[in-house]
Length: 249
View (tube, helix red, strand yellow):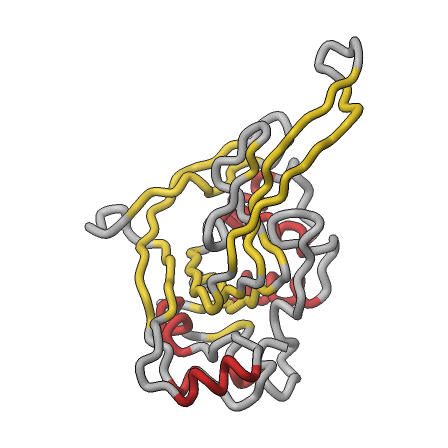
């Protein structure tokens, strides 16, 4: 049975993909989490938190990430005053540390054997029901997540394609949009490879478990399952560095 993939560009001045956020410390992973991406898709399709069946369907997509720009890990120190106490007897001041990635760019690829399912997601990302953000509400995307199929750069592959996930990660044009960086990399012969994180069989010797598959987003019943991922790289070949500077827009 053929595999179909949907390639998505995640680019923003700030992104945050929490994995173990608790109380006053809000962490971020170095690449998008499955729960964060599924939340993004659910917002695009207008899936309410209570619709766990739709959430599980989205979580069933195989996901891979290619890091096209690593970004910089940053931290905000927040002071919030006049926060009601849990007993309701007064107010307090709370402190929190919130981490995020600055200037990161990711290629996220979703795979399944049902092109209609991926096409519905593609169309929803073009005209989302609810606003989209990359991990936190204050972090909107800096450029379109997918092309509309009629853009002059639609041939680059952003969007729906009849190609397996691993093939898209290896061949999709590089999403770096800074002209000077692209020119410098095009002139090099010893380019650094692009880091990848791809869902894999739990029996894979290189597999590691991540507890970020959402089963419920209900506020008082948030539940997650584990998935296996494998870290790797793909070469940044000359073919990936297209001449056009805005290959993702």
